[in-house]
Length: 191
Image (cartoon, rainbow, N blue to C red; front, top):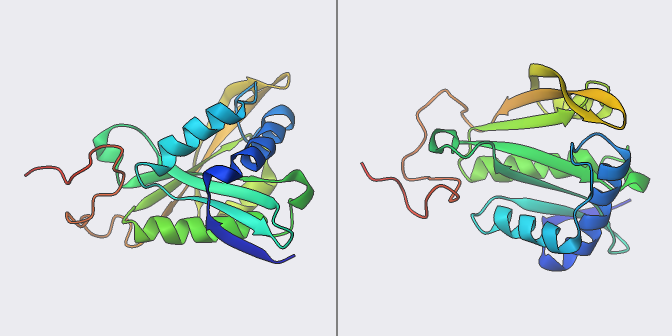
């Protein structure tokens, strides 16, 4: 299967909603219990893209979406502005075919290009071995596990925290001319 990784567009929201709906109902990647509707998914899409965070889709040859991924603010406090949290969701019929890897590689590259320094993945459940292996293969390391932090599908689930440096990571002070995460400000902070 050939894939095209591109920026997500509002017209992708129905397919994104369907992929996420399946993940919420059948999986543990998300700790949501009820899948949001298209209007809510569009609201979330705009909340991520309007400040300038990357939101990507993997389009298959037939034009259908094989998956999507995005980076968003890790936390809302300004000192976290150099860190992003990644999310990736794959159409269940296309899992295990390299879609997640393709999306995550591009997401990492784009996040580095925007000046972010750390990427954090919060994986739903220690048993989610495929996601853990995918992240390890892309340079993420285990940063910690929050034991039994969520309850879904009649079971307690861990939150597995994985992290990787982007660009120079913490080796240098961030470039003051780059101010990623316009969620915090539309302009560079004053001196």
